[in-house]
Length: 324
Image (cartoon, rainbow, N blue to C red; front, side, top):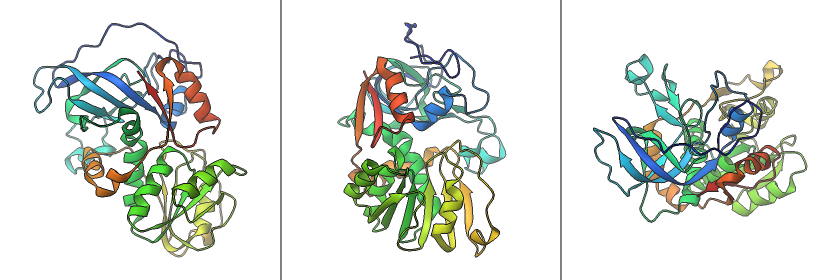
């Protein structure tokens, strides 16, 4: 499913199977999650989008072919392809083991072909080994919603009371991990979205309400997953002194001005940018991750536009996943 023009529906195209170059592998795609970042690509909200491009970066597949020089991977292995497609390896950020901030990265489904396809080529050293018995549809959302959520959770610190603004794919995963860490989760949704609030409570959130409400306690940290800048001041009002508000999206509308007193008291606003391969290793080895059950809505690959529309309109609880 190819994006040929920004803001237009994806189109089904028959293309030659990709051939892996040195250091690459080719996967037969089993499933690919539909992430909000895909919407930002399709809707032209990210910079420097070059079309045509195949979106999708929560990709699970079986190795079909190996390029020269690939080691540690065999034909038939199940692998995951995440957002970070490659890094330069020599800029200051790569040298400091902060490859998520690399000056010259590539991104799956944005600057290189993604997983809304029957086959995908990826750098082998940026892929994630997955168990042979893994459910591809269930695992797919973990490759971005899970990984970014994990990095946000790490940035948020170890406080007891955690607020999540925007209860979609990432939040429903983070909630389960946070509960395994014995935290209390407070879920903030769109005004009037009773279904999302009920979904949050069903997963164990101790409170769920609209983003315009204040929680019953002062929060130790908050994570803003919704791409709505106006939620940042709201989150600052909800957290206690010394707390942190983490912005987890790659795109957000402008943050409106707000009184300095909402920030004062050593409150912090930080962003999370991309992810590292170390994030993937840590997340998939974390005991809490092994107990995550993703709530998924399955769509055939050729219904990618419907999946994107449902995500855009807020009609989903959990994650949308395209399947072969």
